[in-house]
Length: 183
Image (cartoon, rainbow, N blue to C red; front, side, top):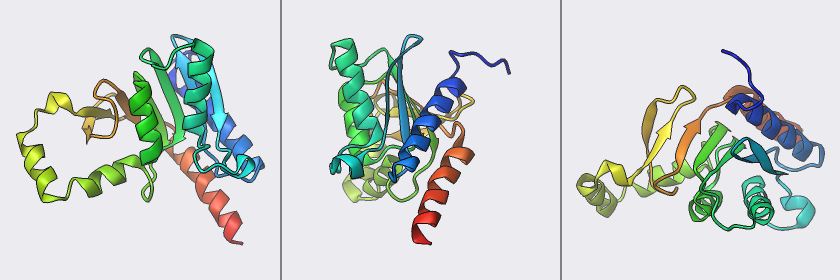
């Protein structure tokens, strides 16, 4: 595979650098980059401790910065690269900003938006509505190779999702952070 400064891997490496900044500041190491076209329009990392704000997740800060930078509340032509699977709150922000693409590294098995979606889909009404729904109305989730891997209902229907890009180093960064915190 050829490496390009405009590749998903390049942007995820920049998001990883943002996550390292968060770790150095004692924050949960999550970094985010938003790209519009081939231009980086926002960089951010978690700042919940520094700002004493539970909403100061990397994704939220990046979306706000990108909207300010572009002078638009909708980011329909932008891609978000984030090192850890977004939580339900961040998925909501991604929904409302109408990002074109979400590319994330490590899965968050406890607080990730896909976990929330799975637990919500277990109710009777959800199972019934799922069986009656048309798959074109659901979000398509894709692996780094581009294969469709499932459907998730918290994101905008037009948002393409690519998961697992640099999952190992992104996940290890978070695991090491919590291991060091416990010791």
